[in-house]
Amino acid sequence: MPNSQGPLVAAADLVAELAGGPAGTDGRPIVLDVRWRLTPPPKKRTRRRPDPVGEPDFDAGHVPGAVFVDVDSELAGPPGPAGRHPLPDPDDLQTTLRRTGVVPGSSVVVYDAVGAGDGMAAARAWWVLRWAGLGPGQVRVLDGGFGAWTAAGGASSTVSGGVRTQGDIDVAGGAMPVLTAESAGALGRDGVLVDARAAERYRGETEPIDPVAGHIPGAVNVPVAQLLADDGRWRPAAELAELLGRAGLGSGEAGAYCGSGVSAAMLVLAAEIAGVRPPEDPVALYVGSWSNWVAGKRPVETG
Image 1 (cartoon, rainbow, N blue to C red):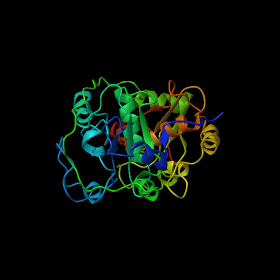
Image 2 (cartoon, one colour):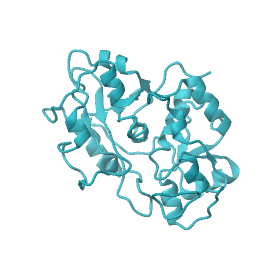
Image 3 (cartoon, rainbow, N blue to C red):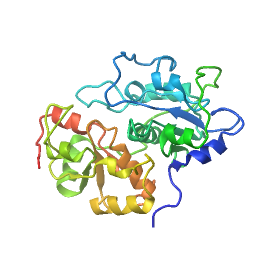
Image 4 (cartoon, rainbow, N blue to C red):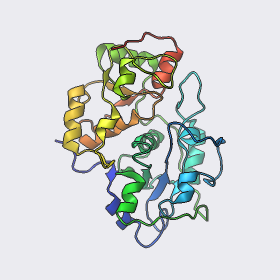
């Protein structure tokens, strides 16, 4: 049966949890704003910047007390042969999470701007924090993103910075299963490997980002746009369970990939929301994804 509770938090519930003060204070959840564009704005971003000043969406308004965390520079390592969004260095990620105030027992909520980012940035943040060692009950995704927050009557703040207690979490990484190119290829042959990209990219009809079009041989396609309802919220658990069950994600060895390891995190999250995979046995993520696969000139399938 699908889980009635899972790694999502409704906007109205988060409004209630943050009543009386900003996020990250007096026992309230730490809230991370991870709004992100697949194609970054013209402004050049610098790595390891100390604060979110200058981030347009965050500066225009955010959940009071939220801290901005950048998907490109803080939730991923530098792009290269390992992919466009490889795993972050554990020490760098530790610095980021301590900056936001995370301690071993913290409750953390992540959100993006569903509709612009289609939920993928929040899913990537959720996955990275779980990979860092936060437990299933510690990190949640705001269902519907910032739009749902404001629709539920949540306040919007333009104040950033201020005094925040430094966190002391230790990050070793490795708490979520990952695939290499070799193990992803093996799953395509002998297990279940799901491609999260749009159908036309999976079929190889178009490829707007990477130099080669197509998909990993043996992979099946579940475009992540199917996981969300028209209002940007996640589909009910029963609907997700049916969709993912047809793809074979409900049992045995299973993995997911996309273009660069961001949107495929939505499939890992969806499997947990739906209850088709328990938190202790999640879908494995091929973090390097297509951008890593084609860098190695590996076999490609189309159609």
